[in-house]
Length: 284
Ligand code: PAF
Image (cartoon, rainbow, N blue to C red; front, side, top):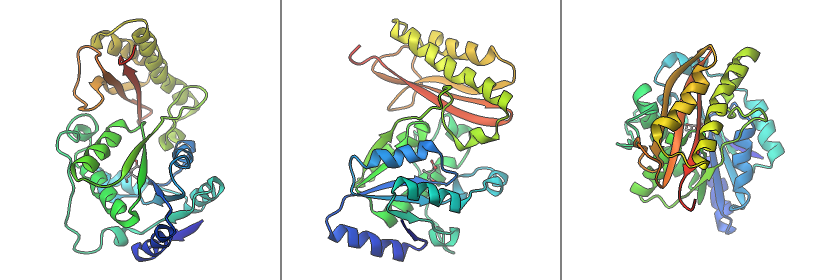
């Protein structure tokens, strides 16, 4: 795997692949890689000849500067994981390469950025949209993959690519769970054993809601209530939101029709855990 730290070096590599007629796939990350990221890279092998991964801890998407300072990654460890996965090219710039002195452009996606994570973390999605635009312009991928775990982020990127007519196929990467059901996240490492057991109430609740949905339940109140009961049924959980939304607009719905998502964020031991599940009534 070749590593580039500058956009100029990255472009030289990309141009060589393009001249050879290769299709380029891209996985943007902030490091601290786990199986969820690796499964995104693996999914890309279906559609692309060359897989590019970026590791860049983006300061502009942290609404709390303390979280940015506390976000530590181990680049050598991450590189070893990507090597093992057969990723072809790593782009690992420093902050000055992405945001040189005088940088003054921000990309915002108006509506998708407003609720949920956008409301709780002001400025977060503008930071994400801006850095992803810069990374897309540097890598110029044919396809890029984003995990369904950060569902609002995925929708933000889909909307931005569509609005700005970016010629990039956005692939949805399936949410990956540990064997016990917990959605994979680098934040899980901050949970104690007990915290982890507590956190399982989230996926248990989502699975119970989906079972009820498959049994014919369509009321948002009832389905949200099932998840709420599961989460509040154990001690040490604090709900940020549990919301049944239309998958496209992310607006709350009162009844499941078409493609909907149950979005959940719950704090356990001070760690914000994001999860979601698809409830698609199409074709049922
Ligand atoms: O999901 C992430 O890791 C980040 O938000 C992303 C997309 C790499 C942008 O910094």
